[in-house]
Image (cartoon, rainbow, N blue to C red; front, side, top):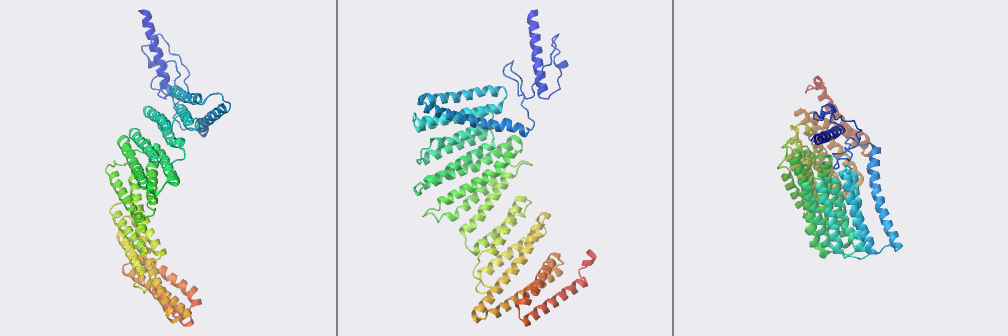
Amino acid sequence: MSDNTEDLQKQIADLTARVWRLEQALGERSVSPATASPIATGSPIRDQPVPVAATAAPAHPDAPVVVEDRKPRSLENRIGSQLFNRIGIIALLIGMAWFLKFAIDNHWIGPLSRVLIGLASGIGVIVWSERFRIRGYWAFSYSMKALGTGILYLSLWAAYALFHLMPASVALVAMILVTASNALLCWMQNSEVLAFYAAIGGLITPLLLANGQNHALELFSYLLLLDLAAVTLIALRPWARLLLAAFVGTSFYAIGWYWSFYSDAQFALAAFFVIAFFLLFAIAPQLLRSLRLATQVGHLSVQDNVVLVALPLMNAALGFFELYALLSEPGRHYARPWIALPFAGFYVLMLRISRLRQLSGGPLALPSVYLAISVIFFTAAIPLELHGAYIAIGWLLEGAILLWLASQGEQKELRLLTVAALALAFVAVNIMYLGSGHPVVFNERFATYLVAIATFAFATWRTAHASSAWRPVAIGSGIAVTVLTMVAVCLEIHTYWATQTLASGSLADQQIYEQFTYSAWAMLFGTALLIVGFWKKSAFFRWQSLALLTLSIAKVFLVDTRQLSQGYRILSFLGLGILLLAVSFVYQRDWLGLRSKS
């Protein structure tokens, strides 16, 4: 009985020492050797060296305790542990391939033996990798699994393509089993790295089995099942990078197939799979975000945010251009201009769904991306469906609607999109061909400018008394009204004198009249702005007036003195002088008390 008691006490002492060493390695020093075991009578705990790098408790009682170092790794450590690890895997795969080739060339083993050796080697490496995982070397274990999986894929490919030992269907089923096994392992071991390796293996399977023939239904059905499996795995383990890997691989096959095999007879099949893949990858980011909100109270990692921004943008762009290309075939042009609107409506729906459940302080990245995509598609739908001046008018109306919606709240993303839409409309009005401009004033071009002036005047009025965040928009819109008014009238002046030149045939005289009219218009418009500025006590209007008067001064001295005749030069300088003296007199009287404010 005493012997059993002593054995029990010794085992308890040894166990206590192991627990203490583990806590020391983990940095938890709340337990000391002196207080760890009041039960251990007469059995001193000997200090033993604790490994620097380690993991959780070993499975075997005699195995060394290894605790994984969570500190940031140096460049040297990353090169040694990660870069060299991956290069080593590639080198081993190349070595295995060369060994198989060398064995084939020397007729050492038959085809069946080569395949069986490869399969046995791959399985053996995967099984052997588990020993490293149990001991805590996770990264090295996953690398070994990747190496073993690669050997399995190469062996199955050789059995099908080189030695013709099995048909394509059998090789496909075998490769699917390898991929499924990796997926099961990554789920059981909660390893995102292993899931990524499984996704890569599944995606290279069609490439390994390719024989140069068109098997569209089989290819895209397989890819759709693989992507569905990836999304299902996302529901169980929210691994963001897995979605990107699946999307990139699927896009690679879709583009390659369209370039090599697509014909008009396959339109229905291609359209079905384009829509299916688009919907799948459109829903997957929302699923990932919902899981993060449910499990981590709104916390998203950097990788998650990258996926939630990049994947919806890439998926929307690829889906749109794929359908656009399919509808570009003869006989389907009638539907092509309208495809942007369904995309825009879909992302408006996704925007509403993404905002149904928003935690306090939660991430707004995905709703903002949906908002941006929907606005982009609405913007793209206008030039696809309209022509000429109606494109600019459509963008102006879109900018006004966005401004109205954005001014209802303080959402920064919508405000930025509004500014972008208004800027695009402003550029379009000034660079697009809006018509010939005949007859003067009563033409499509001038009507477009009137719509633009009204839109930016509305923007100025709507944002003038809003929050400080809208102040730059109000200033920019006010300046845009002035510029558009100036340009619109100048274009009509040019059209009028061009018409007179064609009627009279005197080009030189008409150019003189035209230049003088420009100067007169600039002075009159500047004076009008100055009057409004004094009437409304608005420094904004007065500064614009001063800018126009400065432009008038520059034109009179630099242009009119060279191009106008003597009489018109006199009129230009007299008019400018009188106007400037009047402005100077008004400012000297200081009716608004400007000097007292300075």
